[in-house]
Amino acid sequence: MKKLIAANWKMNKTVGDSLSAAKELKTLVKGIGNVDIIICPPFTSLQVVSKELKGSNIGLGAQNMYHESSGAFTGEISPLMLKGLGCEYVILGHSERREFFGESNELINKKIVAALSYGLKPIFCVGETLEQRQKEETEDVLESQLISCLKDIKDLKNITIAYEPVWAISRGNTNQKAATKADAEESHLFIRKAIEGIFDEKTAKNTRIIYGGSMKPENAKELLSMRNIDGGLVGNASLDAKSFSEIVKAAE
Image 1: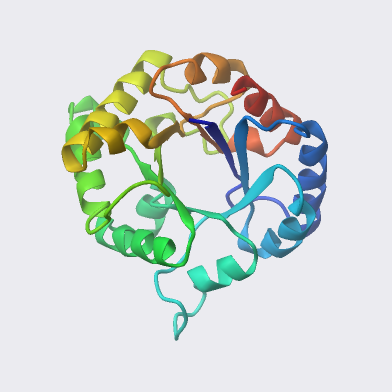
Image 2: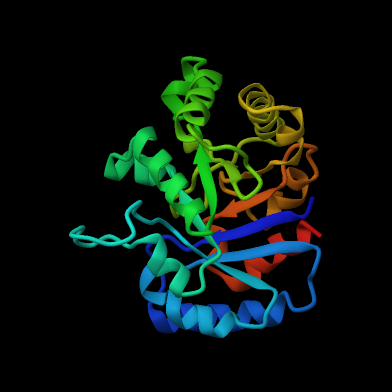
């Protein structure tokens, strides 16, 4: 399967900054056809970036959404709105949404079901905290998140799973250490085996599982060389177009 490299800009970049970055990235990755390239700007920049990306080899994603199509939900964004802006992907269940905004597995499940019903492709995040890892609870946490958040989902053909060990996310700290390639591969393999148990062997084999813990140009190639790592969800290193393009090229 094609590798997928997605940029999560988080709460960064004004509309003008986003447009400039999208223009620069288009030039840097022009002609790359064997990698699925996605950028996920803030909501405020989706419209201008969508227009800029038309006809390019870069897809558009959103960083979050609510599970209702409309209604009295002040400050929320619906899947219908995202589709109207040209979004193809949406990040759901990110650890920062869980930690800072109290999102539960139940809510994330509702969002995944809603996204699929509107033709959006979820990038669904799972991962353990440092405390959970130290207590050797990694596998229990991952399996619980997968079972709960994928409840009532019939197949995973339009879902990408992102393994993001919370302890390895930089959150702007460029000195943060990513998981080693062995750490990452071990958890990716466990996720694949868990999917096989929840669904079946064919689904597990064909599900794209990407790594979301401080991937950067310096470690991208070795991480992406691992058998069960099918791409990256890139945070801090995606804010610079050149840096992000080097990660994309490492996936070729």
